Length: 121
View (cartoon, rainbow, N blue to C red):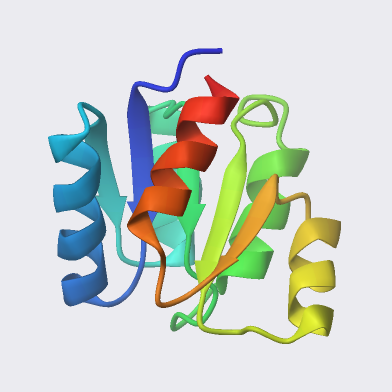
């Protein structure tokens, strides 16, 4: 599976912009969402090849959105990498149990993230 289009989900405009810039410079097409609810909708309308999902957001959190996306027949094949400040081992285990492909703790190491994305493609 080639990763071309990435959905970046974060309620922080700064985080969305920083991540988008890194990804665009690396040749990826980026779509953004600022909430879990918007992520669920855009996962269906945009059909990204990968979703980078924050956890702590108002309304539907990243765990809930990930669970919804991976359980839906239309979007179940889209891998989700949770990117969050929640760094406890229990947080990571819970994120992976929701169906996340991988789990990264902020501040993100952009080189490591790009390496993971390349390895997926």
